[in-house]
Length: 287
Image (cartoon, rainbow, N blue to C red; front, side):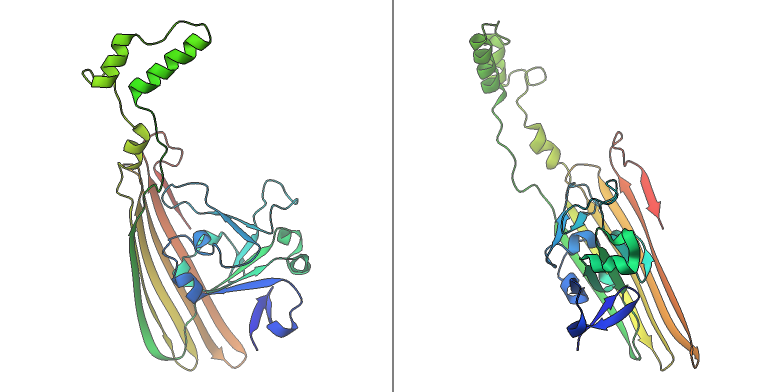
């Protein structure tokens, strides 16, 4: 008796012939991440979610059944949010009621060649009739590098570098006096012994937090859902952060018999901060 959203309509799951996977709101609720593209990782077969950057607020790359051949510049699946084309990270995980993944060629009969790389259908939460419900959820956490490479001390590196030069019958690059200064730390400004990678990745706090508040309700003819969210993620590097605000308002009202008004408003704004020189520095985006 389960119903699956297919294209612009619905179909009973028992009668469905295409390859479709569904993810519910409860599956997403257990993922303490800010981006929807990260939250769907591991929830559907044939779905590849690759996180290529550790920058705060960066989403993941999504592929359905591998890389397609249509439009090599855009191999991402088509994403529809309540029937409108968009990006999967345009909507917060807390605002999603269900996600359907259309994975085979049958979806092309509905959406055309844009469905060549698969289709992701997102349905946002809607209001329900009855008692007004108020919800609030939050999460807190820290991020840190799980494993860092072990580097040679500077004096040992200089020793092996000299050995490499001798093996190539070249002049040694470091004198015995310089190697001793690297070893004893008597002149740390000119002969340092610093693990720069560890210092860089431990300079930021890596703290992240998320807050979401919502209200749902309605009567016999009108239902509504309003939710607002806030998330802030500090990077593992100093002076790097991403702050994001989200908002969702949906309303369904039966004006007269046979005439229904549907209103969906989904908005977000985010600000990414990083030291000067980062291509995303001072970046602000909203839609």
